[in-house]
Image 1: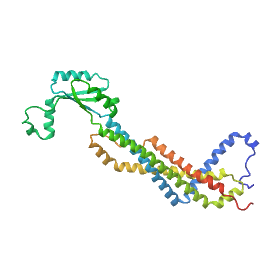
Image 2 (image 1 turned 30 degrees about the vertical axis):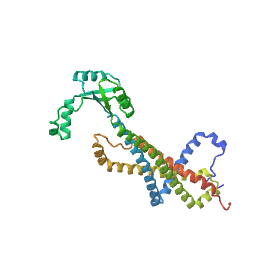
Image 3 (image 1 turned 90 degrees about the horizontal axis):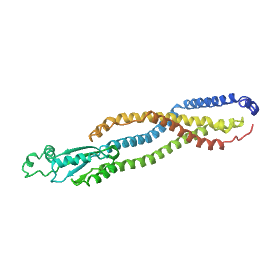
Image 4 (image 1 turned 45 degrees about the vertical axis):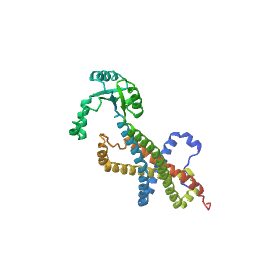
Length: 328
C-alpha cells in the first residue's frame, strides 16, 4: 500500500471521529471538483469547443420550450377575446330588443351585452364597405339588429362559447347566432401539435447531450489509461477514480447551460421587435416571454444532471474495464 492511501483510518478509528469523517467526505469531493476544473483548463480549446456544442444542443430544446410557452400565452389571450353575435328577427322593435338584452345580461355566463340597431349597422357598413352611395338606392334596410355578447372568462374558450351560443339561440327573438371559433380551434390544434413536437424533439436533443458528454469522457478516460492503472496499483478504488470524471461531466453541463442561456437570450432580443409587430397586426398587445429565474435555474441544473448522467454511463463502464497489466 502506497503512502497515498496509507492514511486511511481503520473502522474503529473512524467510529471515534464521526464528525471528522463527515467533514473530510465533503473536503475530498471539493478537492476533486476543483481538480476537474484544472483538467479542463489544461485543454482550453477542446473543452470550450465541447461546451459550445453542448450549449447549442441545450439551446434548441430551450427555444422549443419558449416557443410553446409563448404559444400557450397567446392562445389564452385570444381565447379570452371570444364574442358572440346574435342576429335578431326582422320584425323586432327596439323595445323588445332592449328587453332581450336586459334578460340575457342576467345570465351568469355573460359578462357584457351591447345592442346595435339595424340603422347603426347600416351606417357602420356604409363607412367600412365603401359602397355608401350605392346603398342609398336601397328601398329598405337589409341589415338586422344584433346583440354583441361577451362571455365571462370561464366561457370564453371555444368549447364554452359554443355551449353559450346554443343556449342563446333558444331565445325566441334570436334568428341565429354566429361565433367565429374556427381559427381558435385551429390555433388549439397547432398548440397541441407543438406540444407533442417539443417533447419528441426535446427528448432527442437531450439524449444527444448525454451521448456527447459520454463520448467526451470516454476519450478522456482512454487518454489517462496509464494514470488509472497506476492509481489502481496503489490501491485506489473505482469510486475514487470515477469521481473527477463525474465532476468533469457536471462542469460541462453547467457551462453548456450558461452558453444555452446566452444563445436563447440573444435570439429573443433579435426577433422580439419583429414578432411583437407581427402579433400587433392581429390587435393583440402580446409581449414575448423569456426564461424566468426559476427556468434559468432549471436549465443550469438540468445541464449539470445531463452532464453527470453522460459521464456516469461512460466512466462506470470504462474504468471498470481498465485493470493493471502488471502487479507491483
